[in-house]
Image 1 (cartoon, helix red, strand yellow):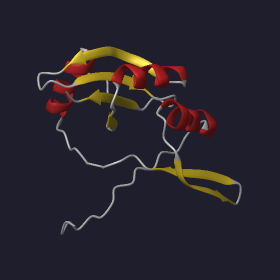
Image 2: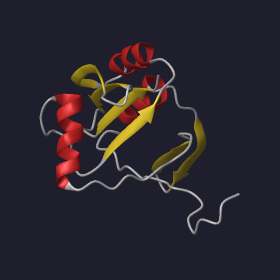
Image 3: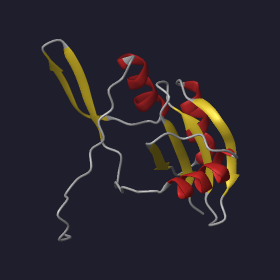
Image 4: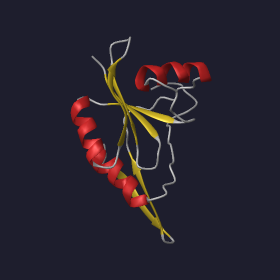
Length: 131
């Protein structure tokens, strides 16, 4: 166990179309709900997404990564990067469940295979497979 002052990272997304976003993250990325809440007519679910790491980029680094993955500056202030075991299968599944392709897969200078997609609400997501 680490002595880190932070024990867990949670990212909360408020969806413009809850059902559409649930379909993308559950069916499109294959995530299983870890918890489901229904409070006073509101709905929410928690999805376990493996190990979490927070990356902080300055504008130049964001531009470098966007250039590598999408050939131009396209991401917003927040972008997910999710490691997957089989990139072609993960991409096919995501696209079939509401993702939009931002740029086809590219091999990075560090040897990963990365593809940039967008979730149904417009949040950019990098799917990557390490070699």
